[in-house]
Image (cartoon, rainbow, N blue to C red; front, side, top):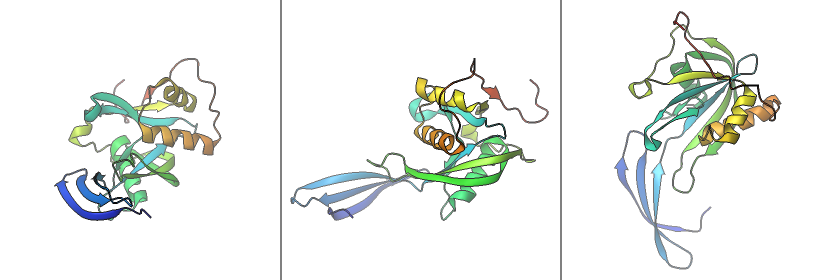
Length: 201
């Protein structure tokens, strides 16, 4: 436990994604300071793996960084929601796939210097397309799916094509568990876009 003394705690902002809490604290020396905390409910991340070992990544626009990023499917926990339930929902909504097997990999704090967000990472396998298909929110329109061999995903991390922290953690932990070789790569990048049944190529 911290030996800091909390003098006051005030919620300065309540948002849809996170709240801003400002604490006045006192150090053991008697000096005082301020801590600004992004209070986040946490989330769940899926590492979707097909039977042949390919990964399923999403590629979409992230407003804060003004870039399209390769990521693993993920979403925010609803109040009181179990992370396993959350990851099942987000996988179907973002990718249109259901997982026959959901295995907990680990949990991570994303930016503990100022945020308490904790993400729960799950390996999702035995993938089958959902009859309901994808259920994208308005801000997710334009999100594309990319079926990517594991060696290519490792290479994308090494070359900086994948820069999202949760995605890097999920891929590397899953790669270790599945005992996939971290070295070597296919002769050419193979990001195959997954299309729902009936979609024209």
